[in-house]
Length: 178
Image: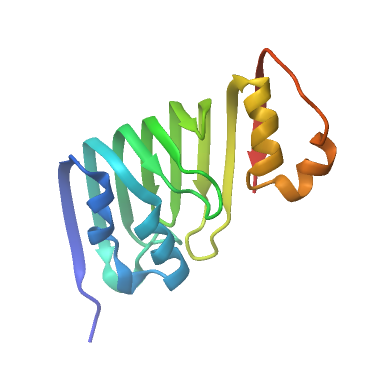
């Protein structure tokens, strides 16, 4: 038979965005994408949430514009685990949006480890072939940034260059990862 047609519109809020994993459409997405979505949203609040879904279920997530799927909410004090092996981004204030087969998070303010982050833009442009792209600006003491480089997730690349280096003062750096 033909696929069921959905016409759904709603508003929502969640006091614990970590519970959002219960609403991930497991049967409609590939397992790696489902696992990422289920673990990425760890904690915080979702405010001013909106949901719009219109189309045949068999066409979901409407990557070719066969229908409409949009979920978005404002984040308050949210924690997101973007990449395994990296510290989670915490205390995030911004916006989380899913549209069709893409996800985008825009953050005005938050933290990564001890580093203050701003202007964070994280996206997966195609959930069917997911590649995470993250860009942000971080600020912290130079000593903590050097320590993060020596012991953090990029230590294999950065530790040899940072060995024997000590510094004081404040620093800012731009980060772009794919």
